[in-house]
Amino acid sequence: MYIIKRLSQNIGLKLENYGKRIDRIRLQNITIDKKEFIEDLKNAIYNKIGYAAGKIGRCEEYFMYYKVLIEKVKNENKIKEFEKHLVFNFMNQTGLFPPDFNFILEYSEFYVNQVKNMDCLGICYATWELQIIKAYEIKNKLIYYVDQEPDRSIPSNDEACYLNLFKDKNILLICPFADILRQRATKDIFEGVWEKIGKKWFYPKSVEALQFPYGFSSKTQEQYSTAFDLLDYIKLQIDKKDFDIALIAAAGLAIPISSYIKNTGRIGIS
Image: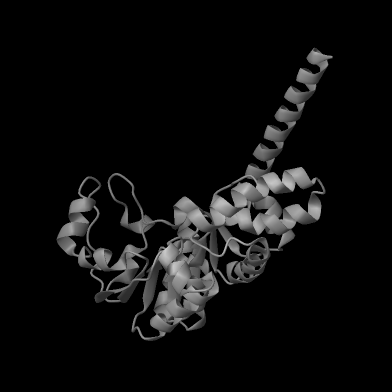
């Protein structure tokens, strides 16, 4: 009986791994390449139209997958086990709060709508990604998230990098540590950091900062009732800024911020 049980477990594991590989191949077949992403971004900049790019990682996919799971799986123990990891990923990793299951479902529904507003959505070929895309009928242009990043080739390849599109543009940095990044946004520091690959400064017209508190901080959670309230505060600050392109690092708020900026006719990249 033990041998039969072990064989069954091994067969099940192999089938599961095979399924994951098939899903990864399917995702790879529907993603665009970096060249198309840069061309779309270039078109948005030159024509001065709203554009949003963002990425979802494993942490965001935890709360996006939650509704899919509870509708599909009837085993309460499996759901409770998932919820343990869900709470950690929702609050500690993505900085969203409160970690109440009803609020998580509410935020997930809101978040999915913001995801659908992305002109280019970065994905990481994670386990549940294909299920999430199908369940929510996500029709965006998809791209492997690494291809949304500035080029890191050795030597640097300007044709494969979008930073030069930002020349003479007003840049806004949005993240909890934006002030220090703005201070370091100089030609000497930039070229020093990228000296190994020979990447050159891209000469933006200006670089400004919009800093906000970390969502996982207890002080932040005392000041703002929910992540929606923190997001509303950030939107108010955005409305006070004069910029062309925003570069965003905001964990679980990043895509909603990118989406909001797109809707104002500007460009948000997270």
